[in-house]
Image (tube, rainbow, N blue to C red; front, side, top):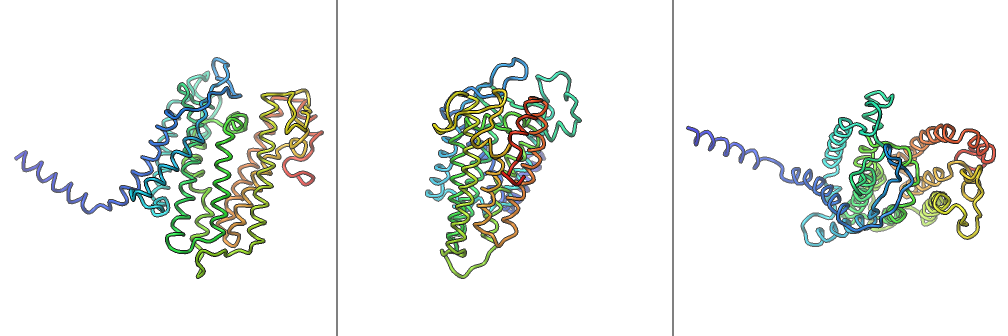
Length: 383
């Protein structure tokens, strides 16, 4: 009787598996395997060991990081290209199963957020330090969870940036395979690849930015890095593929419009990268000239007020918004493209408010003097 029951169960399971869409199962497993691969590379690939800027919440010691994001990024993209070349996966796999991947990314984000919420902040006095439970779940309890040299926040950024690049390449590959990859799309993919390579190349610089100084690790960071960063940031790719064109492999925009997109993007990059690098140099070598030209001038020896930081108090935000606008200009006739810069404006406007409040609480009268010296918040001579 038991053998008969087990036989019926096996036959039932086999019939269900045979009717299951194997491609959908592969789609779910592929994204999970990608996360596991990046995690293995993150812990095994050698990197530069550096001290950051933030300190441990209990001991007060400066946190130490192993920076290997650029290597992990390049190795993962290379392995993806090899798998495509060997016929193991389709080149446009991230496009073919885009909605399944979004669902999986959201589920994993929620599960990880629950784990972080249950863990709480082991270094805090009390459970939430005044936060509501909902706020703790969304914003997070601990700023920089680390286990040895495994930094969870840094890992999330590596996963997000790498998955975003794979998305961009897969969408472009789908266009190419179907004969309508335009010059606009190529320019967009190049600019975003440059953006990501630049980010990982300057990993150490970003240890001195708002993300690592202020942000805690909760649903906001987890969901942002696993879903918003790799999928929503790629929304302009959706714009390209939603357009219909009879001209394959040709520009749909004039050369002047594309030139304007590239110009706006790199103007933003100069502002953002220049400002972040100047601040990093000041924090690490306060007496050294930036670009061998700008002698640092700081209010109270703490707040830079010349060079890029003499233009506006958050000039790096202006640069990031301009880069987003430059990317949107690659496909300006689709409303989807403009979601990206609008998202950045909303994100950075809120961050500006939080950062101003934090700086006022930290620096007091020095911050007031800085606001008088540099009156514009983001856009010089405008706002």
